[in-house]
Length: 410
Image 1 (tube, rainbow, N blue to C red):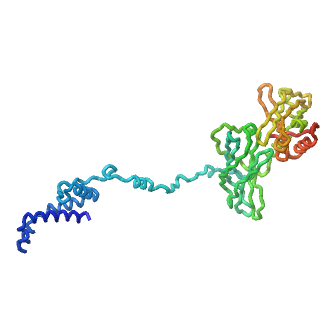
Image 2: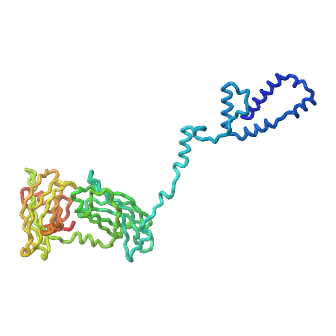
Image 3: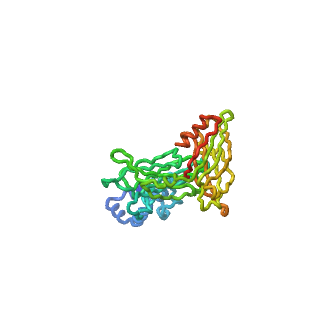
């Protein structure tokens, strides 16, 4: 199209020349042939080669500008601008085109960004190993929630027929185990990756008294849950003020040895309860304790008891007894004889629990040590003798009901 317009311009120029020299149209064939052969067309051919080397856009814009100025019929090839490489300035691109060019590779996947290199690939495990579990803990202070993320497990044992297992993990907070959560089942793998998060509502004041238990199970071909092992993580040193919580791991154990140790006898407390429905008041008497300390360290040890009223996981009120000197000649018996009163509505009796914690303190170093605790409450919080003591107290109003309770480790 461009060459046709250019030839059209040259033909118009030739017509003008012919109109000014009419004798050219009356030449004989032989004279016209001689006149044509005498024409020097080499400059025109050179200009055509030069125009052909120009960019299409530059030459087209040049002709349009000449036509706009009214001189498009008298094109002078000597003033055609030189060829310039197109840039953003002399060859502008529309914003839409530039955006499409910049998003040319948008949406493509770079595998290097998603490659996962497990640091435990070259980790060696001992013989008879039951597996290892990775998890991460975090705490939201505003909402008082403990967030536990089960990351993965490695080196889980195969079944008896050498086939891979279908594992899943159950989580619970000891000692009350009021809430048990569970991951999804991973099929046919001894190295599952879970990446699942679970939430436990718990206050920052009581989180250090809890133990997190992980139980890994396998679902066999008969749909039966077969225990692979347990892992326990104590929250006694858990710092809720941290902003970054690292990923940690625990080895699995077939036998729940840590549960036995956590429930081992740590002494006894004689506790009396009395509830008065007329004035909606709960009275707790801490009478005495047994075996709260070792006889060897009795001379330099003091004991005290904390009594906390909890509404689910929220602390309502807390009291503490006076420090009592432990004496070897008392055979481990410590007399407290202190009474505490709590305001308690009758409709809340089944939604609260009473946490009684016994502690000792070294007189020289002032270092405190938790001996054990007991939880009294309704069916949501207590079992066994602790539940029976609470129910008897609610049934026998205005009567003091006392029982010895065995302390367990937190």
